[in-house]
Amino acid sequence: MTVAILTPFLVAAALSAFPGNPRIAQGVLGFLLVLTLLNGALLVAGTYQQFLPQNREIVGLWQLQRLINPTDRDLLIARSETVDDPCGWVVLMSPSPVLFCTDAEVMLTPQQNRDIHRFRQAVYLYLTGEDSDVIQRALAGPNPSSLIWKLGYWAEAISPSAEERTQGIHAIQSDLIPWMERVENHDVEVSSFFRKFRRIIVIDRQQDHTFAPDRLGAFLNLEGQQNYDDFVVLVYASR
Image 1 (cartoon, rainbow, N blue to C red):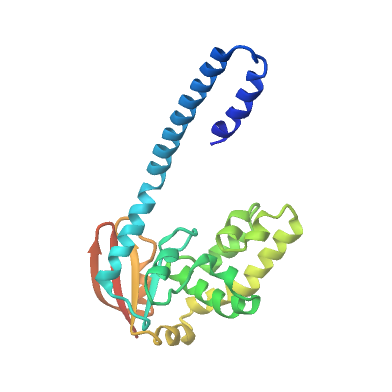
Image 2: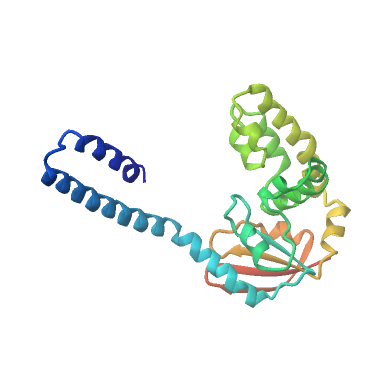
């Protein structure tokens, strides 16, 4: 894209050196047109291939809605590591609330992030097999920036200030880790949260699982399983 934008400026500067020779100008403009069209074709082909798996996943998620028929009394649990992960799409495709989406914190107040978002994040991390002790050790490591980013403390992760990164670590230790420890100890609040919903529907991949079955079984009872293309849909009920 940069080539397509900058080339006309370079050609315009070159043509000023040949003001009285229209053949040269026409030849250069023709070359520019061919180059731009070729560049555009390569960009289209590359972009199509790059986003094809993601677009197929989105289409599959849309078709899943007819299979599971979610309602506002159900809770959906889906992978949420980046903005374009299934969680960000299923929340737009169905009336059901979603357990946790990483980027939801940008739409919440600081108090809501501490009281609501971090609790749900702790449940999500537990269900994906994460452990508070492992996170604590990683935060104490020489370069915890990638973990800080993964946990949603983006400003602190990319800050060049060591003091701000330290503040991010302290925020994780004070806001998120205590919730994770409570979930790992099977706190009654987690079970009470799940009992609010008629069904807990977990959307996962058949080959590359995000959620740990033993962790799900710690709070939920499996009632059914359906496979669709690359997805597996697990239907649970609260205990």
